[in-house]
Length: 204
Length: 258
Image (cartoon, rainbow over all chains, first blue to last red; front, top):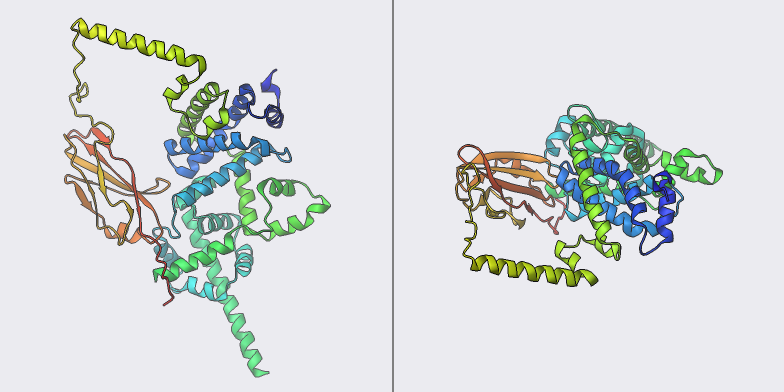
């Protein structure tokens, strides 16, 4: 059998047929095709090659154990992404990555020195749904991604810079600053509208 | 107001978490490519969902990214390392690969199966006999030498011991401390984030070093940091490094509002 001529999905199907002891040649071929992709992802996530190799090993081990759950309804590489993403999120949780990034106070102050209580203002106005709408309306694609990964998944700014391939000098940090500036303006507008609405209600 | 800052971040974190309506990546990709009628609702959700758009961007980056010149060497090394590890694991484990892949098997376990056991025991016996025979012939054992060819001391692993801070702390540490290493003229220390991004590094001729205010400020509740010390000789050769230690300030449970 010429495994090199089979698609990823065909290799997985073959491995699934021999549940319990899939042909080593199939697994080797399947993994070999994706080593570089996962290596690159893990290196961008961890920033050092030794940790990246360990993380990548975990990812492929998880793939091996979970091959039976691949239903062939997507490309294998998309499913592989899901496994890699989950392993990274788990790694972040296991390492208790913070809810705060060093330098953020400075960062936020730089973004809008006149308004010191951005987060508090946001807290008063925001429900989770409203926050999502606000972010979607105000931010561009990269700002959304940076904001979501940093504040939603606690990925470090350095990891985000590498994962998204950001080429500007200060990487993800610049996008957090610009996102915050836009959100501040939007919140101020929202607050003004709220106050007007309250005033009109009193007049009636 | 660190407590309120944490609460604010928690609020944003909740807003940015996937919801029940967010499709899994496989469906996300399918929806982004096709326009079937049954995915109209999902498409509408994705267009208004920051989380889903981010996920989609990451999937595309994962699938289509090319290796930058700056990371090419590291990616090649990791790829070669994976090939080496899995070649070994898959070849050695065809009888029970799932168990093996769950945790790499120590090298000595490979002899602990069926026909290998007899051969391994025979080989071990021969080696013992050979060793005894050599000893009886009066051949002297090679002298243990802790010096490298260049004469510098090379520390055995874990000979350089980092002491503190480690684990959960009650207050931000003022300094880093470690045990003196033989032959060390000075020490390099570095403090890192958990993804090994370097936050600060410095040198000391003592076995401790004070943390500057900027780093102490970065030690906020709930954030894990790493640190490591490396012993250097007078001619700036690396003698050895300590294990990487982690420490954090626990998030206060009584985070009442001001």
